Image 1 (tube, rainbow, N blue to C red):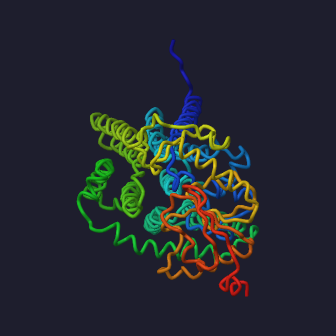
Image 2 (cartoon, one colour):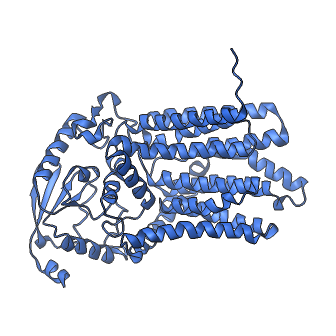
Length: 525
């Protein structure tokens, strides 16, 4: 029996397939293993925002404002659970898959191929991490912003110009990079476009989009009493000091292996687009004025910008879902211009093989979460810690013993913290524990990795120290608990040693009882 669907029914059916597939595949991988410093990044902070505490005001944060608020909304709707935490990432996986499908479809690619490329993207986009992560949010929102730019060039619809700044600002408020790189690319290419296609109406739609998202942003700051200066210091100025040090430390030396061999499939994917640009520049006198030139060059520059961003981060590689997107555009333009079937087959093969390779090497092995050398058959149920962690299969590559031992230690630690009704700071990479405890448990950072706060040599260390002491006194903190493993004692340079008494409670838990001292007395004044 042969079914004949009309085009609209087929499109809707494909969108349902994309929705369920992109959600389910990320839910599956988001349940496998933990890498505490990354896995729990927005669990407690999302819970805290849902309960009236906010970044920049109540805890120091250098990325992830968008992530915090999305997670808070999801927790409010679905409840605080591992399912709803992973569902946040799964929704973002659907967002990038949907917009890939929609964009390729608007560019007149056969709808069956649109589905294929969208599914390829969903397989290796968010499932690499599985749980909400700032780099992924920033990259996805940036690419959606790029799609809006490309769709306007293709359709001439001003609707897309309105949403262009909306998605770019959401990307920047997820993480400053790669959003800033994509913004720069679109800005300069827009100057070229508007130089030859000037329109007050088009510029008005872009400005209207900027006005809408920035108004919403400042309303959130003002209504929640988040100081604008705190946002400026924590989110803009301090991260710039991190970027300055990383450019020399991670981008250089400019070696062939680091720049080309590690990202060879991205370079190969862009070759057809580069070929088309060179060919048309040679054959067409004013090709650089045409929209297709801007479309192709923006896709190529975006791929290279993401390579730059990957080199400047400390994370495992996560940018490879850009490959099926680039190949999708290569498919479109080769099919329209060159019309060589064997080239189309090669592009589809390359998209399939690269997706398969990165799924096996990175997604299945949980490489982004450092789980590639861990025996996944030793997984333990996260609900053994707390019912909120139901569906999580626990194993931690940074814990030397069996998962059952770590779970036992965590349960004992949580019980000890639950029995202490003092106002307390909790310092840990296990950033889900705060949501399991009473409201008298606080944290002065979202996370405690080495770059999450200014060290003593940073020019913003004094402001960070004042931030810590302010909350220590304002929240009437009586004890600070530190749960290992932790790279270093975060507050060791923030408070004098004569202001606390140290007590080691168990293998991973240490208590610092706050006592009266001259430093705290002076800070009150």
